[in-house]
Image (spheres, one colour):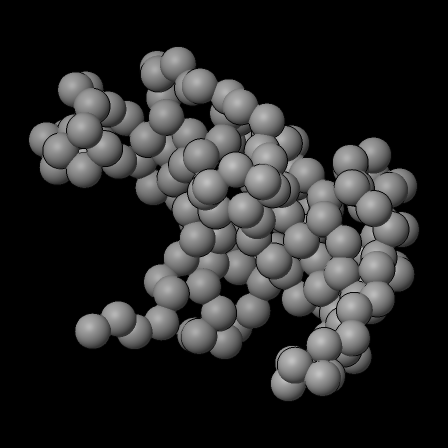
Length: 150
């Protein structure tokens, strides 16, 4: 019934600022932007006169890797809440790296809020393997994760 994940969507307050973060700091490739407006958009988002700027970025040429979709609602007030790992919702978007220490250092140098240093996890006994990971926040405070399988 369901195939692969098509994209992961994040609502942001400032699309240009978010594009710069995901492109220039995380290194995702900017794929393009669309403007959603009209009757179909109103129905989709359940809001009259809805306008949404939507940008797509991806870190892989692999078709199985879903892009990040950034959505900024134009002329609409956005309810901004602090992301919380302990609230029912999407808790984070996880990115892969093969050099977690250099990514962590680059994020710190760019004044990105990191919730910890990279941590080591060993789940071999559970059939999953070893990894290092840490959480950090994007410009809107959305929680993201960086992981390096070992």
